[in-house]
Image (spheres, rainbow, N blue to C red):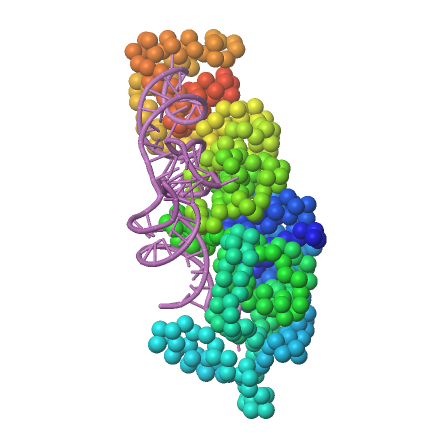
Length: 464
RNA sequence: GGUCCCUUCGUCUAUCGGUUAGGACAGCUGGUUUUCAUCCUGCAAAGGGGGGUUCGAUUCCCCCAGGGACCGCCA
């Protein structure tokens, strides 16, 4: 058996869809698990819609999540000559024929089929007609002579044996009347020329496979193995589309989902390995197999993505988290000044505590990042005259303290609770709002200590 | 409409015919933390329906229902 080679073959007509990312991930993981290679093929033959910027975006997205392809990317449009040559060979060997039906004629057939509520299938009119009777004014398309009798079986590595009546596969077009090859032909030729051993793709391609297999057989090429994975659905159970809120990688990265977390989530969506939930990159390569892929479609669940991300935030190396946070802020928020960076770094242990995303950490860090607190915020209304007195007292009390820490701070807070006959919340909440502008956030001691005495007093005195 | 695929807690899933049907996320309790969050207890939560095969079916077979994919001179 030759070395395993897989591929991911997106068309560069838009941003990479999260379903595509999973397909790419499975292909990549399988090849790495088998010590094989993974290739990227750009199917850019739809000239109207294909754009270079999408190609770069796709490569960038894959890299973001940890996938890199082996070798150069294979550009399908550069191989059109090869595809046409194969079409001619099929024609010569009587596996294909020219079809001179006009588009009106085809439309008419489709219309009639619709009226009779029958499935449309091309009537094979030109399969046996000689070119002598061909109309001169029509440029022909070339159709593949598909099998009519019997059944075909696809031995799918995920779906099992899938059997289909050959008569349900029409004589599909392999070359358009403008001389360009169509998808099923091009994809097959490319997969063969790239020496692919395993085709792992969405099960929306399952029917195409029966067409493609016939081309392999006609050309006497070795068949690759096929594995059709179920599609991802929305939480409502519908097919995931670009219109759905979060379906591209950018949608996730901009809210602060980390690549490793999304990779782990996607890995477990439709695939499992016993009860294991958390997989490092190395583990996912080590354990990935086709056997673990389920046959039923799975739904995208944001709360699981979030909790996976939360898990990574809490468990990864803090310095790594810090680096990812800086990158995230620079990309989606704003660059953070050097003086603030050190403070954030040393405070990360508690800043990350309440966060599910990098955006949450950024929000928790705002009181450090910004020197001015916007007093027009809603939460400031919670500070009444009594609260102002507490704030003022607190500010005076800490003047005498040399070293601000939990031990020196606690008695001050406790005394205030007692003298104002209130509880911790009664003292802590006004202080937090005064210092950060929000009633939510890190623990009050953490805030005060991270800010330092001068800054704390400065902010408190502004209120009163 | 035709062809093909799918169907276990709300969600992702485990189960190689015999299990109190397990885990994780979400949900809800309780506890720690003198707010919130974290963390820790615990609870609740599933085999679509109907027939077979079998001593025994979530597991094997058939039918039905529901859902999905495909049915382009797009990829």
